[in-house]
Image 1 (cartoon, one colour):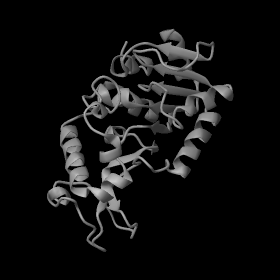
Image 2 (image 1 turned 135 degrees about the vertical axis):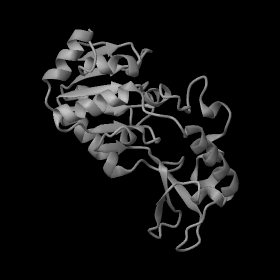
Image 3 (image 1 turned 120 degrees about the vertical axis):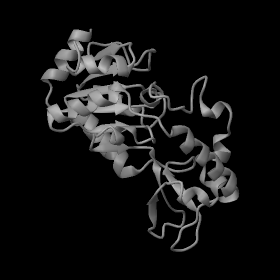
Length: 243
């Protein structure tokens, strides 16, 4: 199984990567779903929605400050470094991610499609055009306000009640359908429409390597190679960074 995955990664010229929360979790980033997920303690409708932001901006931004502080010091693990190495080897390697923490970009990868947005930036809720990197300086004020028009700023993630960015999700599906290998890492393949990306690849005859310690929704078939290991352990081996 692992040898077959190594062979596919070595020989395919147009691979694409698709990652989920498990990739971040290995670096120590707390995720939302699962037994230790943040939604076990907090209401998503209140703290990660447009209505919540408008009705209780101080409460919502206090929570996002907590999330940002919790992510400080979290660094990309060996699996991220392996993907950066693979991107350099292939010359290109689009990365589609459900994560909002920016660890792919921090690890040096380019062409990263963040389909759920990014926690690293904020913009004007009224869309006046102002956008900024999130920093301790910006977050001294609760809620942070747009310096151009005085409106509340919003984190640039997809909030409950919003649609995924259409151009980003459309390109993600297009990449999955046109690549010659999709490497799926750390996602249970349950949250739609992002979960449809691996199935779109399979429907177009694309081989899929899935790396996840637990079983996922992907089918058992000749086109799916399931590696039940953590990404940080196995990706360096798969891309030739270790024997």
